[in-house]
Image (tube, rainbow, N blue to C red):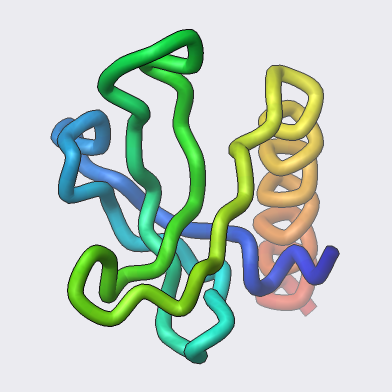
Length: 90
């Protein structure tokens, strides 16, 4: 998956039903949002969904991975920052 499209930022309210913006694009081309399942066996699990849901949902859905995916993403962000620092020092 293209990491440039995965990164996003959330504020402290990221667990709200409204979600937070990510840089992952959904099928309709807008930024997907992070949402949290409220009920059922998957309650409290986070997923990416269409920003337009429930009004004009394009059907985009992707579970947010576990610790391994988060670790990989943080390592990639660190690599990007170290690269930027090295370029600025040139």
